[in-house]
Image 1 (cartoon, rainbow, N blue to C red):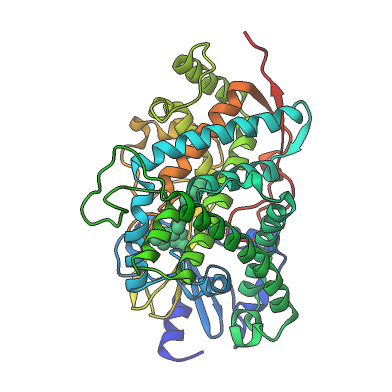
Image 2 (spheres, rainbow, N blue to C red; image 1 turned 90 degrees about the vertical axis):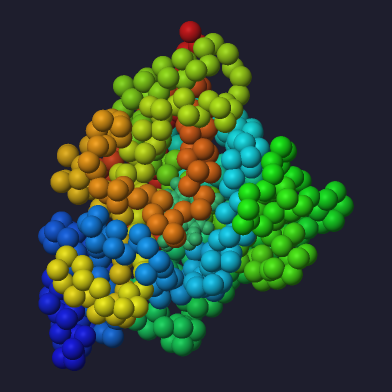
Length: 484
Ligand code: HEM
């Protein structure tokens, strides 16, 4: 406790610690209480605070200046060790990997979200949104928990786009088992964060929780293995599906100089010896999770908040009317840039409810943050949720106000004040896809329904998980619009 590193850490503001155990005992809280505890500390300490659980030191950062120092360059590109608890699941996939492996994979995967690919994806997202609307029609007029129905939509969407596999052909119980297993892995993640003997693999592996985790992992891996096998089989029979009218840019991996969707590209990269079966599986696991659970969380909170703002819903509807008139034609990629007000609403919803509410980096060298010298070896958690609710960045921060994102109201805002998709070299690779999916889904839903509030924003009790979730359902009533 009294070496040089400890002395530096003790200078950083933070909750009172106890001898040897540091703040460990204070963290033994329920999942909801833990998040509330962290939130109260972010309000108490203006820029950052530390949590010290011997021998691990964590600092929580939620001011744009320090965040820029951490994530804007490649100096702290490496994720912190807390992502190790995701490794049995995502192994060395893009989210977790580091160094040259990360660089190589990012280069392989970036072109799979090129505009020409997104254009094809838009059609698939539109079809899936139509199916989503049809399932909402069956439950219209009564309160429903939106989370399961939305996550079915987003899981179908990522599978059919990036993986080229339609899930409707699969067994529904397998899909539900996959989603449940992800939810349960979130609980394992939280347990491993708060208890030191769960955190370290050698002690965790001896516990019954580790055996439970093995069961959940078997379910998720079986699911993704099946998706890969089906697509490989399809390609063996029919060849690769190539996006039309595209030529490769320099410096990208492509098939025969043409661009193609993610899993096809990985299978092709395997044929060229650039990736092996495990490599494909870890990326499919990563994209399947990141590509559906985040957008599901984003959409669920977006519908909840829109339900509380009838005036905003009507403005979105007016914008849609202006674009489509009385036509029932599907949404195309050309329509999306015209949905400017809807975009502001989604952005504001992601500000209040960022699906990835924190990210974490390893400080592999000393760095000064808010005038404190943070020693190398500290875990640095960037708390996006707290950043997005800072009153000096967002006046009346708990208020839902889409016009904060009008260009004239964004002038002078710090570039790192709004980072739902992170920023810098390790930002979200699926950002454009996610915005497209959310726009298409909200537009199609609001064309057909008005939303009535059930779950109130004040009822939300966040739980400690990788993705932002409520401790309970998020309920909304979808009421069929009267056709004018
Ligand atoms: C609203 C939806 C989404 C949000 C808010 C979101 C947010 C984020 C954030 C904050 C990160 C940085 C994570 C970190 O530093 O630990 C990230 C990374 C990532 N996201 Fe997303 N994401 C979303 C949707 C998606 C989608 C749809 C995909 C895939 C199609 C995706 C794939 C990834 C991947 C693979 C990474 C790791 C990138 C890297 O480290 O190079 N995300 N995302």
